[in-house]
Image (spheres, helix red, strand yellow):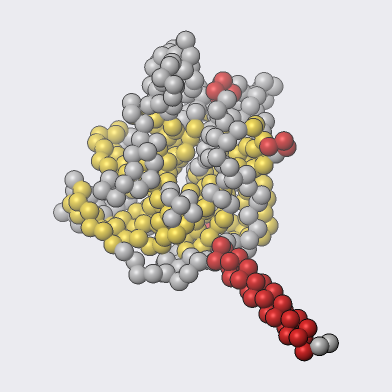
Length: 396
């Protein structure tokens, strides 16, 4: 080999090595997150006093749900299909491996994450997500898995919405447990309006299952040939809020209306909550949803609480058991379009007052959770989404 050719080969090898190094760095940058920066804080006024807001972590790509870990850390889903750990110091992990295949288009993606009631001993978690099907179709699904340091193990799909449909919107989906060993799953009607009324389809239904995915024997439609046995209640539009009141065990859900008409329901077994036969909203075109449309109708359940102008409701969490806090006996809901955190004051089950927090920051609020020490944790739905901690006003 001539000296000139030798130098050319070395130069080419060096260029290839540099290119490979750059590709590796780019791949690492796409998956790993940097060490936490100094956490920014905001002091915001509210009706009950000053609220301290701390930005625990940022740089999350459209995060959808947060679960609070016993060690003070967090699990966060990103809609694109990534599950991450966040340390109490705000350090964000690379994506946790083993997440099921996710259909991440439109409103679909990796959605809710919750810890199993026996998480302390089992390390089990539950994920809801848009599951891909044939020919571009998708449907809401739920899987359970064992959480490891860097990967999920023993992944089991316990629920699949049927039939799968083509379209990018209205997947729901939130998860909550009662104290009788059941998991509730909210879903959307996938913009197939009348599917909410059809009991042989799972779109637009609140589903109740045992924790292993089997159907409880006392579900309201068990034994009916014309109905899916998983169904708890029906006639829902797009449920993106769900929580069980720790004081009473009552299930609360909230759902998006069309143009107006976001609503809260306390769903009872076998009952019909009306969509699209009754609604307080109108179509985005400005027209009625249907000629038969009204705000109420015999045999259909009217909303427990309704917003004529849609705040675009998201995550939901009860704040109870903190007698010294001015926020005690409240229900929190995220609001996407309104850019706020809604706090509803409760007297028993009765909603007596509404306050909107975080309006000054104008961030889309996707999820909210309450910790055992009375702090409130919030996710913002942005391309550079944040995990926030809110400390309530000082008690009187």
